[in-house]
Length: 192
Image 1 (tube, rainbow, N blue to C red):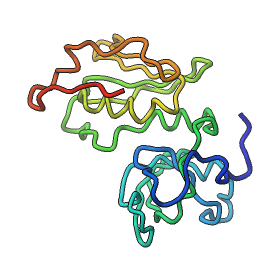
Image 2 (tube, rainbow, N blue to C red):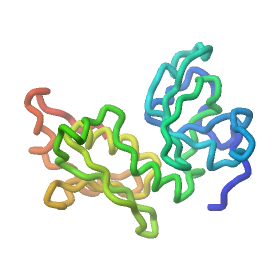
Image 3 (cartoon, rainbow, N blue to C red):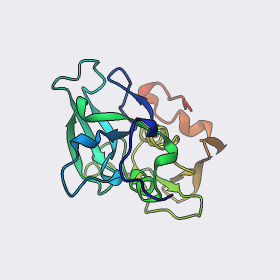
């Protein structure tokens, strides 16, 4: 897909202040972009949270990761044009998105990864895996990626595939034993 000059409301699934944007690819309003950054690739971010889902946009912070360069930033809710249609994501954006760990992921300095998450483009290209420390992180990673990626794969510590999704359809689901791996939380259900 060739890159557009700038994205508009027609490139969004939803626009306005009442839509949920957490965990979604969002598009910044063109008026927010500064000179030298006025291109479609600088409009796309992954929303990691904040108070941006509040219908009153005044002073509400939205935390996001740039899908152009991976930089973590903060925007005001009023700077957001809408939630991006999955088909407008370029290969670069999809690969950048695949490298984002879930918002509530545990610190890798003090927790050992148990899984790794991968996303593949239709032509088979991918980037290095993302470390995931728990089944909850696996579920969150799948949830973040499933609407935007061609193929999502989760591997265990021995690099065996324990989950695979192709074009939004589960082709290899997590074994039941893994889904109930966290007894301190009473087991976890896969919600896909």
